[in-house]
Length: 289
Image 1 (cartoon, helix red, strand yellow):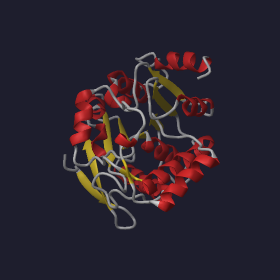
Image 2 (image 1 turned 90 degrees about the horizontal axis):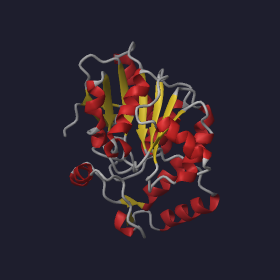
Image 3 (image 1 turned 45 degrees about the horizontal axis):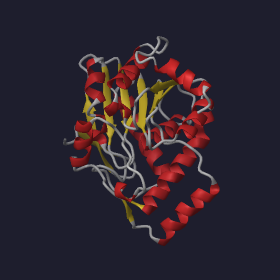
Image 4 (image 1 turned 45 degrees about the vertical axis):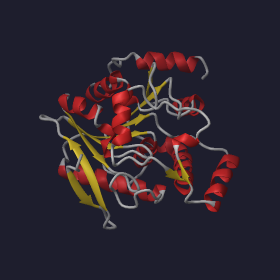
């Protein structure tokens, strides 16, 4: 789909945005997609959110979709600055509308780092969907950085994995993702090294994130391991934790009840989640994942 609008950031970069406008909005969500994805990542949940009075605004992140540097990695600092400027753009045009920030996978790391910024616009809440946030040990980082320095342009695809990874069991959504011209089907080693640094940086910002927070995770996620997610949940006792049973990595494409949980949390954060995911999360954590 063509963008709904294009905004220009402080360095002159044109960033396409896709907007799902609610008829009578009571909240607006700035949504950041995952690695290799694009603004189209929200095609499944956003219409349901709009019907519930929540407008979704989704940018292509720098290096992805139709944004500048497609296929390249800029830096975590630049991506977070982009996110801050996009949030400021929305806040300036809707100053009385509660602004939520939502990120999936890589976008979750960026959303968390934005939440921790002192100079950011007011954020009513942060929603992390299968967030790619965990500290890598120095040995793993050294291996990735060494490989990236030797062959930075080597392209890595899903076919190079030793196991078959299922990001979602929604076949229609997977076909749409695969044939979407905005999707990146290969990642260079230097971009993967940048992603590892981003995930590691985001893990250090967890204690500084002040906004109310909802963190969703599927117990069939093959891309974000259970251990790092359990660690993130232990480090965010103030957050609402939501375990989607049977959910894969692309939760909002994967399980409609995950979208229902997001809507419910924005609309009334004190009520139990429709999926029962808060109870499931407590039981999962009690089992020492």
